[in-house]
Image (cartoon, rainbow, N blue to C red; front, side):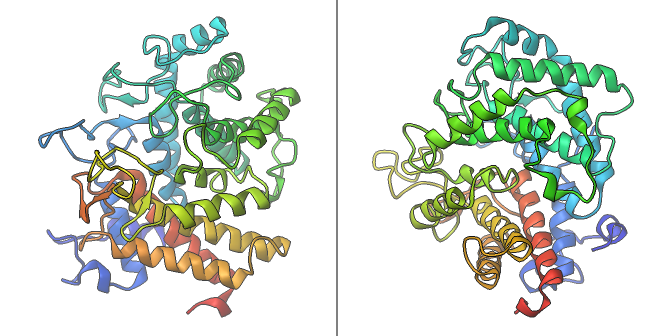
Length: 416
């Protein structure tokens, strides 16, 4: 899909093109519609509000910034060729980190677990205009945010994009402070609140995210096959080998579990994509656990007994909220594994079977999207909640569709 087509198509009031509902559209138009819905959440400064929900029906407002949501929401721009918009989003994250840099340097000096310590750690949620912290009511010590940031900034630089900006020296100092912060607060052995902002526990998804970020900048060859040319970013941000080894050992000890209380969690898909920081055998076990235990009709359960939007909190197991995001994530993972299987040979399954699974999960994602092409945050008792669309879920649908299209380009004989 050409970028110009993505940005200039017009929708009617129902989100349709030529009065056709989303489910009946050809694939290129589905992509355009889905992207437009994501763009409706983008703000002038390059950030994405999590959804347009203003809190009028109870619960937290979602029309604010979550750092993780912004970084994942803007991933879609890479997959439609809009690198400039993605870079703008990551430069906004840099601005926020710079604004609260004193917390990073303070945490690095303490050399102890910070717990929630909301006055001393970078918050997860910010006002979309002022970039002020919104609340201190829950755990903000979320290490995966730093891992994702380090991983993707390094990735973009290796692809030839100036995500750091004009003040490179100042940003590199920030990154070095960030690495010092991560290593001195014990990212590989101490608990945090993780992607779902619950804990504190030691999470394999958090360890893996930071390990991936540090590995990207350490430049030890782990990610070399991703790039046509090698950019020695290790000279910009030195990461000692001992940090990488400690992280790998910690991740291996905790896997296949997500944490002490969770044998599995669908956020562990991040260890396969985007990070590819686990072995083939570890990836296979993660996928088996998730598909066997967490996949439901309307989405993927985050983990057994999840109370968030649970249909029956008195009997939570079996009544968990179901997340369409999980379907899209599984589709992406299987597309990436199919490409890897073609490039490197036998991995988890045959390329044909991996493509079939990617296609299946993409169809399952579309089956639970709204009639006008929006991905809800979750379903409870068969009904979606008010976060429609959820920004990073909308982005992941776009990534899933584009990733599968890439597979079909590489393996045209597998298209059904």
